[in-house]
Image (tube, rainbow, N blue to C red; front, side, top):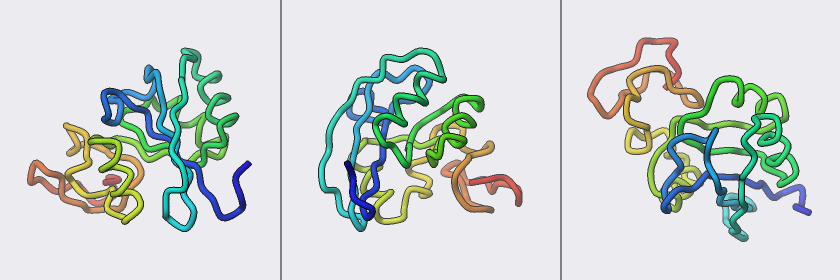
Length: 141
């Protein structure tokens, strides 16, 4: 069991990168952070196809934050209702994404999935995307 000062995050993995679609991802990298410092890393299988079963699996694993690529709106809603903070539309190498999360740089354009000029959930307002355009105020960067 994790202490009150420890947070468990999960990143779906495909070939050492953030899996492009969480809904069909087969494995997770679990990272326990204490005061922003990784204490331990482990991997877990995620074979559940049913969205409810996926939510249950993450709950059983004690996940507090999910950093992922694309995710269906219904699954994201279910995870949020279960108390999991979802940071979606993220791409990149798993270790680079983890370091960006730890240092507060996960919103940098380098970690935005292709097509990021559209709505991106989980970050601030009015950010520039790596295509050079500016999102409209109110679009979540």
